[in-house]
Length: 322
Image (cartoon, rainbow, N blue to C red):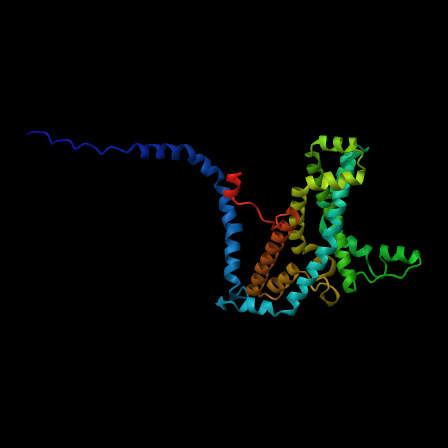
């Protein structure tokens, strides 16, 4: 009896062999970094996508989710409390961001000079940023108290009338702005200091040879060379200013103080989502805040970076002819 003929096995393409080899080599790397992507998908990506879905629904967190379309966004456009929160947020942002970044740039410029105890000042200016904001909000509440606050006591000692810091609309906004300035001035100063250390010293030496004063060196050398760093701090300060929550919530409570003068956008979103249990409207407020922050980030980018220049530029053909 003759043996059955053997059927030759199909040849494996070289590309498939290389793919298997690469997969075997990279599989341990993929497994090593997979926990990050799993955690991001669960605690980062899923909440973002779910909040988008919730913004088109009406849900109290307990019953069935009912789809309402654009009803939440339509109500948001006519909600007087929401626009009051938007106005409060922008006023506080303006009162805090402009002085904060100006002070930070000046402090960084002074720290960059050859002064004594530079390391001590760097630590001292950065210390407020790592201090508990909840504890400091309680301290600021005592300092700016209408009745027994240190600020009003100092004003009374100077023969001036006391100011209702925590019971008037402007006083509440100024108090919150002072808290933001106190907390983030040192943080931005450290960033500016790092940018100053990257500027070539030849520019300062040339300015000194030309007889430039300290103010001229600051305005004509330091500020132009620091434009990318200033752009970064302006954008981050804008996003942070539009996301204020801890300061007004701890200082004034969920109601935002007298007349909701300290009601910010995030605090109003918190009230709607976790006090009123209107998660659909809270999600709509969150995405409205995202849109506002994105628009202002683009505006700040164009203003600070100087990309808003619309002067005509020569075309490629003309450049080629030249």
